[in-house]
Image (cartoon, rainbow, N blue to C red):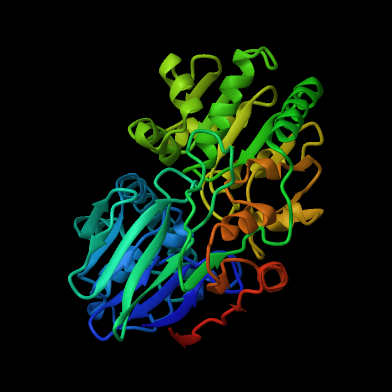
Length: 460
């Protein structure tokens, strides 16, 4: 088997790994790049022929792992997109939302271009392209070994990252010997709200290992929740709003779950929570439709009542409803996408609240280099939003304890389950993070490690 690393290497977005044997050509993930130069990168020609790909194995629904699927199909892919049932449901929502953003943004840019006498701007893909992609999805269950019929077996294990997320085991023939490679996907942290803890693999000759937080530790969940409560109380006392950029899938549902519990426990009074994301509303319904993925605490709490039985929860569907939130000056928690502030409605809420000292912005997830969210977290005093300079005067808080990713120790613990000494390819982390985590693995376990460059090819 050969493996080529086409994305998600020395960076945290655009995950895509190309594997092939004499009989099978397959991808693991086909994600969209985010951040600097992403417009051009996402439009580059694939370094393979999409018509020749037999399988696309999808580890989870986040756009940095799934976002280029419609373009892949548009360019001729006719194989199977293999993933869990929950991921298939969430990916469909995510891709339709992404296409809508692509179409809307291209219309806006085209109007500007035409006024300047330039060429129109076309979307990366359209809603019709997404619709054409859906029939290719094949749903499989966690823990069941499936056969391709071409010398390849595979199985998904629960990665504990978001609903339906999986680590992927692939068995392949090397001469007369069977070998295994495992793709970690994005590994969740133990104790995450709602979903189960990550399942552990124990044997493999090769591991493709994420390293998003491979050089740092998260705060514990109790300390994170204490800080969340304090930020909300202080902000409301000052007469401001709490703005939370959050991924519509995963983080939003975790936040709702925690806020609901805090009100039930009496640590917060009835609070007004606005979810300004049609995608998040649909994703929340999808979460509730997949209780097989819940941990025992979530089953107990969600069976006792609605997520919204303690908080005053409002989903804003229309653009007019979203605009109306700008008139709310205090005592509102507004959760909107995108999580890295690169698109979606969060940018409007930042425009109306970021310059107000009485407000607070809470970042609950990773901010990739080059994104608006990263610039704010890194201490920018002024940021540009919709062509306007906006002063950063609100309180800026990063609550790493809400991260859906395992931290350094969690990643090390996941690797510690292996009974043998696999060759580890370290991916899905900023370059310095991946390099540091690679050295840590060598020192701690003596495993052979490699941090691939984009396009690098290895024979297994």
